[in-house]
Length: 341
Length: 274
Image 1 (cartoon, rainbow over the protein chains, first blue to last red):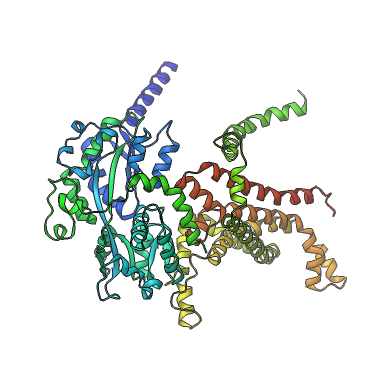
Image 2: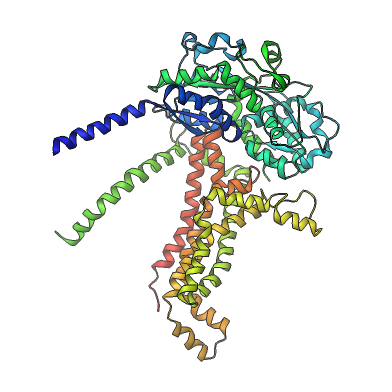
């Protein structure tokens, strides 16, 4: 009796550990992004490998904070960043260097998407353009410049995003640049934001809230990204997206391999799938993300609206991620003081 | 085995669990508040207490908590009295209605408030149609929204605390006061209120501590512009990764709540008078 009990217990344990070896944990960004992520990468991955993927919803800044906190015992296998945190994470030893030979699709990536695989910075699998979202029913003349946002008539219906969100940070840094500041001096940006808030603008912190503001609460214009513009247009709203003439910040969404976990093989397969042509075309069709794999072939409307290829991508502005990370805590402090009521 | 030893042994597992799972980790975290690059320091506290911005956050947290406690008391006491005086079936239904908001997830509940209180929501659009407010009026993302949301969820704590005490109150005491010539309000003031003081105190304490440390509801209803202390701690931990400062803020919050506890403990030590 005891022997059979022992045997059944050890069988259960063995099955348990075998099952564990087939699960990887990743983060995703919630909302429409996570749905596209599931459809284009995660579900095909699960079907192809039989593994299961656990998704934790965490924005890049939060995910990075968690990774640092979990240094001794990381809980993520693959971590996705949109704000350049992979550069700092690689320097701190939180990410594992990737041998390009282990990713079958690495050779087809544009150079900007794989600046430092051997140093641990994972490849970028989506590139997003920042610009102006506007309600084309209300604003008849298409805005062309970031500085159009300084028009006081629009401030009452302007939506700003908190800088805890990568898109909010990028939008703010662009506003700062337009107002005359740079990465060493964000006071002009803060002053401009203060003016906007006095004029009646509101601040939200997540992408679904932006969508809600445009859908229900009479928002006219917001500095945000091309992917959510696409989602809103898809939902039937009269939203236009335009890249400002002063420049377009590019957001590089990367998939990175976390150090200290024992699922490297499986995780690398997930990263490889993220940069495969099929996944990239799927992402472009779902939310208009620009592919980084030159073999991804876009057709029709999607091809027209999505920046693609070395040339288009090289024109994107990239605010130095090292400086952004180093200054983040000072900036968050200053931002909180500016927006506090 | 003596009684006392037996009690200690029975309580030991619970105490051990509490010590390992609660006191030790919290203690370690609180120690972070005194940590500095060159050894123990009070710099983080100085930074908090010397900065007008953070003092505003602290004052807002305390002010809102006191306001919420007061409103819960003003609504909760009459509600509890009615619940105590009606029949058992009606009381059951009233209790169910009272705790129904607690049964839904806090996030779902808060999103419900967002629908009612945002710019195009029910209340602001009604006010706008009546011509009382401007075009872009919204209750959402303001201190008023936080108070409304928190009162909804903390009212059951106050009402049920007072209800428990009122149910044990002998109704003949009230009747005696009335037959002696007291008006209804006088009998409330001189008989019911003093006797229900323990319930009022317990309820107030619960509501105050819960609202001072509350995070999700003020964060969602107040938005990024209206910060309370718990939201500030969250930002320090997740965004700026300044854990020492966040721990200092946690200590200050804890101290503030403990300060409220002290008068309560002193009041409860007084021998109960019938």
